[in-house]
Length: 190
Image (tube, rainbow, N blue to C red):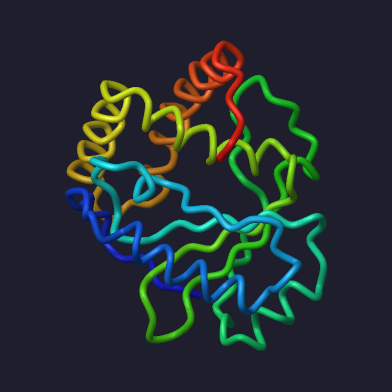
């Protein structure tokens, strides 16, 4: 499993989208038709947003099958996390099957990445896409998120539990606003 380092929020790097495309192409090659879509998610997917220098990738699949893990392992993705459930925003249906995922990291010796494998249509698959698109469309929210993450990193540079204990409820606020925005704009992920 990837070792967690100190929490550092870097300025936005315009090469992050191109770095994602390299990872995406490899994952599509490894998974073939098992990947319904492969998206750049997380803070590195939002132009102008400072972030941890780790590319977050989401693979949408029809089901979490053993064949997915086998293909990724055969493709050199052997660094798996034991975490199998996403944070559930307050007020959401907590049924475990709606928030389940697989999480694998980059192949050894390649660019740092978190690769989240989620079931197409589940709320945990929709969440990062809506979050990304909402922040792209709302620059003040984007700047606020970066400021909050920088403050957490400054005050708790080595405490990942504190980072997520603070960050998750803040993101829940964005989730509520993003869902209202999505309904108003008839949003669907690109």
